[in-house]
Length: 249
Image (cartoon, rainbow, N blue to C red; front, side, top):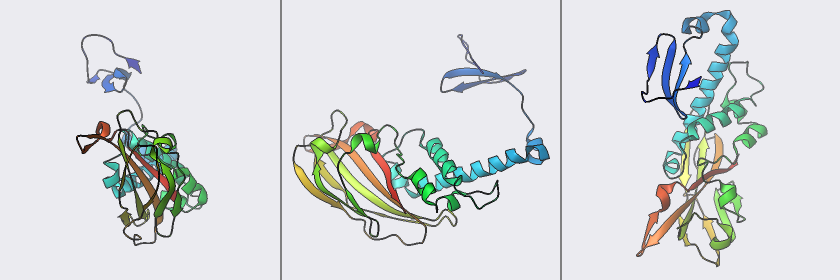
């Protein structure tokens, strides 16, 4: 792969060269590779087909989770969340130690302690990591999804982006079955607080426990606002908001 310099920017194929635009600018590479038919049918590419099948399954599982939390994802995400989540799902899939190669799945891997650990703590917005933004202790009741912040000081326990005057906390309790694709999610109340040096105790409680028998996900959302003349505006269009998987059961 080479980088294309010059006034004329090309995209497409010319003789043995393919021109395309990537994140690093306009690039060029030589044509080549193995035909699709050979990859699909040649016994020599059996491992390739197995890897492709498992990668596709992992990507589908990532999409399933993203769709399940889409209402939260609209408030906190980065532009590479899809690829980052697929990478995590591939790790989860690797903990499926019972299925044949080429058929390992997230549905089996997530049932293991190691699979849950691989996905726990995932930040949907890589620009706002929970560990870099929020420092307060909290207690999670996994039977109800309730989260209690017993001694929260927004000035000391939260690292807000410049210009933020207020912060909102909310949560969600998701039940997701990767095998059947059944899903149910319940949202908590939203607690909105000024960023100031005072101690408060706050509780987030989902409306109810989501139905189903899938994997349980507990998610925390932190959003920042700037108040102007009594009206709160989302700060930087939500680019500094946090969405994190704090626990999986």
